[in-house]
Amino acid sequence: MRSTAEARRVTVLNAAVSAFARAGFHATPVTAVAAAAGISEAYVFRLFSGKLGLFVAAAGACFDRIAEAIEAGAERATGDSPEEILDAMGDAYAELIADRDLLLFQVQAQAVTDIPEIAEAVRAGYRQVATLVQSRAGAGDAQVQQFFAYGQLCHLIVTAGLEQVPEPWARALTAGIRHP
Amino acid sequence: MRSTAEARRVTVLNAAVSAFARAGFHATPVTAVAAAAGISEAYVFRLFSGKLGLFVAAAGACFDRIAEAIEAGAERATGDSPEEILDAMGDAYAELIADRDLLLFQVQAQAVTDIPEIAEAVRAGYRQVATLVQSRAGAGDAQVQQFFAYGQLCHLIVTAGLEQVPEPWARALTAGIRHP
DNA sequence: CATGTTTGTAAGTGTGCACTCACAAACAAT
DNA sequence: ATTGTTTGTGAGTGCACACTTACAAACATG
Image 1 (tube, rainbow over the protein chains, first blue to last red):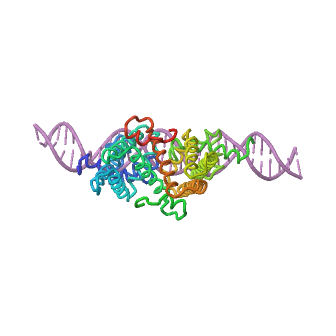
Image 2 (image 1 turned 120 degrees about the vertical axis):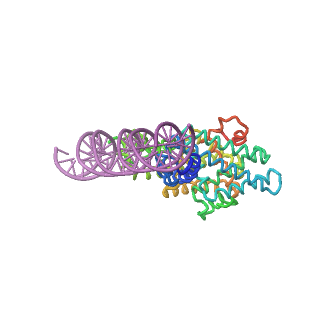
Image 3 (image 1 turned 120 degrees about the horizontal axis):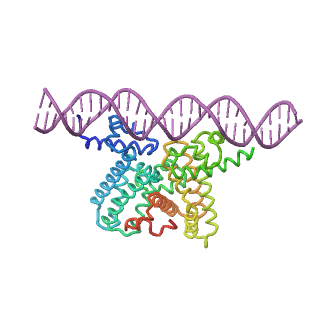
């Protein structure tokens, strides 16, 4: 008995977010997650209820990390106007997704929302983050909407690799976006 | 010999866009596409170079339809200021994605950009649409960027089913978005 | 009508993967 | 020590699916 089940679950979830982020739900065998976590495939199935349960739990971990980073970013805001807090939140988010795992996982999760359990997990994740942004920044609906619209644009820029494209249309889409 | 190969390819591509849109690249067996097109799986493999070739061709067809609709929308603009043309383009896009196939296909394609051929197809598609919007509307970079940012937000709203969510955070994200 | 070409399919083949089960070793409790 | 519980794995099982091949029927052309 090397570790408690709860500690293993955390390790596995980190490996799962990373693995699912790259290839998505259907193209990622749980063998890959197990290998990344350093345990056997069979034990992953005992720790989580099937591949679907694993993915849903990983989604929860993903959005928890995002909410945590955004809240910490708000704490570092220079002022307390909605604009300043939103800006600080944007910076924190840009910094967080530097490794791309959390960003890509969101894209992958959105792609498998035809599975009801995953759709619910995505809604729960955005509920958590959106209510946080709304209440913590004290921003109006339009500002919150804009915050998420440009966040989604960021997902497109990264998945399509637009920061590598020198043509004018790509420069227009990536202009001023923090950090890609 | 009922039909020419070229006519079959068109039929198959329509079926492919629809089928891939729902379940994505990896979860859609080419049997499903073949069945939807009313031909055998083996013939699909003769018409296209593997499942990947089929998906890439479907992506081309998808973005062609989008570009066509946006151009037709611009034609119907009430004035010829960038704002009015962009607005007409937005309406045309909102109308086009009413059946959700074209929207969901884009989301699915973004999720499998770890496959280089698909990443290139996505870039080619957005190049086509973005240059069209930029040149046809005569809009500045910031306006073009905003156009696509809110388009991407629209993808989130649909995949997560936010238009069905009555809570304040979801209302903020969906406010004023055309047609969901 | 004979020969060639294109359209179409039925029936495989091999492989990858989700999930299970029987079993073992580490630890706890009495 | 003995019994029970939790942590952990190796070795399967069965199925879905990408892709191939061999073959047949429709059409064209001389």
